[in-house]
Image 1 (cartoon, rainbow, N blue to C red):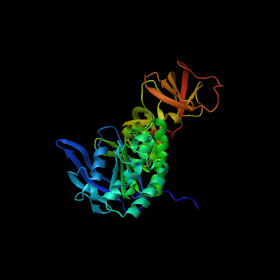
Image 2: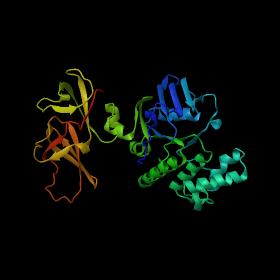
Image 3: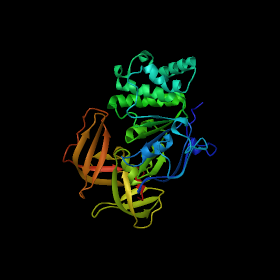
Image 4: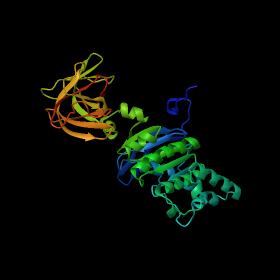
Length: 374
């Protein structure tokens, strides 16, 4: 049997765990969250992604109960959470600083919330053991936070947050303090733990790669609004605006005007440059301003003109970023526009290498670029 795809948002019979209904949050004159309505489902790993000041942290603080909406309601499992104080919600929050008690052992840090809830001693012991095993910290139970590494402290904070079996765990930039290699390892650990516990995770991050790695869905935010909420693959391959295309990954944006042609459009973008062609379902009027978003890995770069591609532009190599397995070429068109092309370095550079100042041809297929209205 094939594994069923986890997509509760596409199932009309699924009830969301969290519902934002027309939620606005103002601080004085400033609107931090602007009339947002969206759902998050049980067992989702949902990422709020955006630049500083886009409202993602306010969103999370409202879920935690540290802020209340100015307008609208937030429902958790069908219940309005506004009247419920933070410590009574089935919600836990893990902070970027981890906020561990330095004088308590790892074991006592994890047990803290359970003790405060007056759980029986045996039950506490069992639950802490379970959490230590889940986060692979059994060996460190007796150590104090300063005697373990940053990555291990991160796991203690996670174990402590999950100990009370919340319906929802909020993670605020949880990997911000870790170095790059450790961040990557920890991302996979987080996903693993989330899957094992079945807890709904909502993560706030400004790191697009992190959001794309861990999340079932990513909500890209801008000025207090969710611009697009979708699976990482759809956000990358089918962004709904230049903002989203530009925010996620590397992209070249070419601005032009559209003219209907076959099952797509011809896009004129500069005097003396050939029109580009894009297959698209977008409905544009004759001569409408539009944008082509093209990912570097979809652009080929060759010394000779590509015979079989309708989209072919001539340019000159300005820059080459060599990343071991990939090389990204920054190619300048006669108009001054820069287009990025990426090639995989599958073999040693045996064929004539393209180098700076070389005249080259760029090409891509009719379906490679995304045509956008805004």
